[in-house]
Length: 409
Image (cartoon, rainbow, N blue to C red):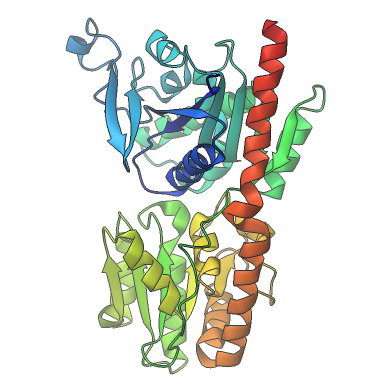
């Protein structure tokens, strides 16, 4: 008997970041379960997408939307464009090419930052499960707070429209998995008049790959580590730079700051570092392999997450899995992962002194550092490892498939 087919739908699959990490996790969960055949689709989320019909390129109008086959980490996927992709809301609408690609799947699992893109697959006669981290209104609040140009006002308008699409997705999906408590409560309020399979179900981290080193040499070459899309304003690298300067002003002359990510820190970060004369103690590493990232985690004295907003923060889970204590802002997702003073520290938003104080404590007190690191590893193994989280998703897919079979019969 043929296995049911799961369609895993992801915006910008090959981009780095949390959504791609969650997609990787769910791909592996589906394959390792042995219960499903898998088809992966990457959705257009870029106005310049070459598979899309573009409003400003009339030559694409007659050509239509394209479905392009490609390969991601050894697994095939199909990239599907949108109609008039320069308009953000157009990327959230169904189109016949996408519908054709999903015609032979039984259950659709969407992975998203905010849920708007799930609208592209709602209404196709297939059950839709949505794994979602946040809302566009929350995710973009800093960027949209004070528009100063026509482009800024345009982006703010697109965010308002996207926010409506976010709510529409949450009101029409058959199952919803969220990554933090505030998003759970929001989805629950929105769906108060209809039954929906709503779960707090964060993705898991591979605790075999992300694991502690046999030995940590905390005093040999101390460094603070930060990994992610460093150029993203939500990551608030300026906060980290001010905290690092404060640590140096406390008399620390040895500790380095190591940054890794596809995009480098913004100009404001370097300006603060240069004004303090600390450029020689900051290293930015682009295009780092997974093996190199694991090694960076394993030997770090501390991991810093200075974000304004995080749905969860996969890098947070990876660092903790490697036995590294984390100092994070209270920015959403980390609030439900870190137990303050037990396996890491949580500090207020935009408080460089608080972040510097806790980072300095982890640099100077090796006993506390190791104690929190051990507790962080235990926290991941018990609650946020693949073994601890995979069943939530497999159970949902099985239930949705069985309910669909019942309806069809």
